[in-house]
Image (cartoon, rainbow, N blue to C red; front, side):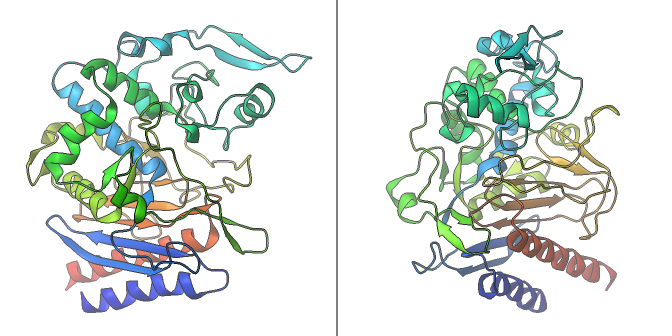
Amino acid sequence: MTDLKATLDRVLDGVVSGDPRVPGVVAMVTDRSRDIYSGAAGDRVLGGAPMTEDTVFAIFSTTKAIAATAALQCVEEGLLDLDAPARDYAPAIGALQVLDGFDAAGDPILRAPKSDITTRQLLTHTAGFGYDFFNENYRRMAQDHGQPSVVTCSRASIQTPLLFDPGTKWEYGSNIDWVGQVVEGIRGKRLGEVLRERVFDPLGMADIGFTRTPSMRERTAAIHARGADGGLTDMGFFLPDDPEIDCGGHGLYATVPEYMKFIRMWLNDGAGPQGRVLRPETVALAVTNKLEPHQKIGMLPGVIPALSNDAEFFPGLRKGWSYGFMTVEEDAPTGRPAGALGWAGLANLFYWIDRRNGVGGYWATQILPFGDPVSFTGYLDFESAVCRAMAGAAAA
């Protein structure tokens, strides 16, 4: 492991010292029992405090798997039927209509959906929701009709029209924010309270929440914008503390060591240090691809260039979606094996979970737009180095 540490340290040092560079990065690797690598390099904000292992990040869509876990717990307890109308648990979702384009005056054309949205569709991103930075019609709704961005964490930001009838295709979007609303409807509590009681405390996760403690605020990394010249600017932007709603799709703040505890739970079939979070049979069900042949995962088009580049994981590789994660359906170029899990967050945060080999990793930066060439390439180098080391150790 000494060689692996030196290799991974070089990857981190390379991304913060090159031109262009990232401001700072924290990256970690865990096996089933403990963290086997931890590294921090660069600055929390350019020219400011150094990046450290206990730095707090807005983790954006790496929140999703955590909210999905809370929904799976409801399924285990017989409180949630994945195929029942989601409006049975979150009534507001039943009022949403399908956007069928715009009329000659530029106004949205809306109609009733052909079927009810189910929580299964929400978990698999097949319910009909999108994001304005990946979908032109949502971008137009935001620009011309005042549809709020999801980063406002407002109720209005998720009460958006559907882009298609539920179940007819796959599109990445605000589905898991609605999963959070389903969980709240079942539990009768804010999602943050549910997660604290049922996920964070059993896993010993302290530095994580929809609202930062004063200590967390002091340790929060700045989000930087990458300019056309490759330069970086502190955006002065943060996800809101004390949000109107706890957004299960993107709203959490956390340190990387806390997220590693969550990854370990998935490597250990749902078990945590303070008790079981999910049953082994639930984990086995949750980690397999649930998409149907007509529900294809493709490129995420960056229709708001300040927020995202065009982005795709492993172009040409067959990919699926489980209850909370993207799955690779064949071996990936990094060495990630078929069946492994992973996803990302908008500010260029990335993780993978390889249950077959008992290893997972997380790479955290705070840069927009998504798909940043420096951070994303660094992450791929990081994952590849870990996978090579694991393969070498297995062969030895």
